[in-house]
Image (cartoon, rainbow, N blue to C red):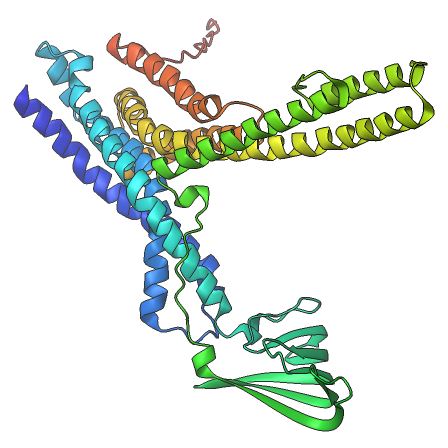
Length: 455
């Protein structure tokens, strides 16, 4: 059996590597075609471009590995079935469950490696890719000027334009910043932007320069010009590498996300306590309403009681009614905060489950792919890819749908992320049982053609 185990795992390994390279190449090419606009005209060196592409390779690998496992299982067991190797093993008294055991172990190994990759390598590379992407966008900021949007990336200046025709900017307005002594504003009818190796040149036509001394407002100067040139040195345009501790959920390891979940749970608990104290001050009852509707209904009930209370003076009644109105507004605001905090908790929960659910699918893909390969008896790459693509697209649709529903607090992160695996496990078990029994999982009605009698 050891020899058989090594043989099957060896047969799985090479199709897996081959499929993984092909899938990564296809996904990487698609990403490169979409990202090429980031680099055009930026003057970025080749090493930085390669670094950016390398960092984005992480999420491509994370997505490609499960599909490569499915293709490898289909190809391997399809070829073995086509060459009657499966029949030979069965004739020797080896059951199909023992045959797929080394394949399942192969899937477990890939699963464990992918869990490690998703938790320790993928978040860091996603983080570095986002920082580098922002730095690339900020390089040569003049090339990113859009009408109606303030541009703050230009050193010492903020700029906004009303329109743009080809390379000519219209109605250009520039304001100085970081200068506490003189405030400068520039307005021109048109302007152009050109770049050189060590700077970029902003040329303005037909405009005015207004300068005001911030220490003495009587010192004011107005200058008209037909042409004005602003030169920004290259030192201000070079790619500046930033280091930030702020990370998104896809850039965090599991311990980081658990800390954030505890933080938001503490914030929610503090809101509960704050609302309970507010209710106690306004009504005398420290009751915390679970929903906005319940809180508003409770406050409305107290308002009705207050209006019908004849023991209170007009002044006291007005004072308590104002307090209840403030409490009503606080209920809405606090529950909005709770809703946002709960959404953040779900977001981190989704990402935690995602780090395990997608790798675990590798084991289920091995079981499903092995059974499909034996049933189809076809081991070619084209057959394996077409069948795998259909299964993986359906699985990924369920995964994305579950993730979206969990993010919107419709279902729990566990249900949203593990339901696709549950469906896939049912399919895998169904196909495996029919393969063990050597029965086709789908039966088609036979077409019977009646022959007429010859006369």
